[in-house]
Length: 66
Image 1 (cartoon, rainbow, N blue to C red):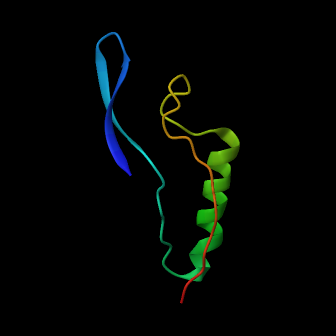
Image 2: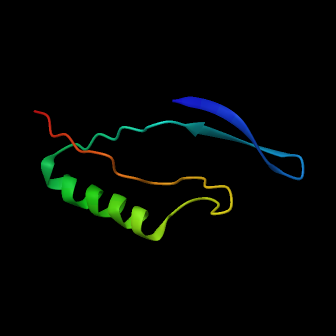
C-alpha cells in the first residue's frame, strides 16, 4: 500500500492510498454479514467521490484460515 497526496482540483490536496486492503473477520458467524456489506458496496459503488474514484471496492478473493 502506498499513501499519496492527490490533487482534487482548485488547489485542494487529499491524502489517499493506492493498494490492496486485507480485512480480517473474527468468527465465522460474522463472515456472511461482512461479505454482504462488501458486495453491497461493490454493487452501489459506495465511495467518497465518484468523480475522482475514491473508495472503489472490489472483492478479489477470500481465504478462510483456522
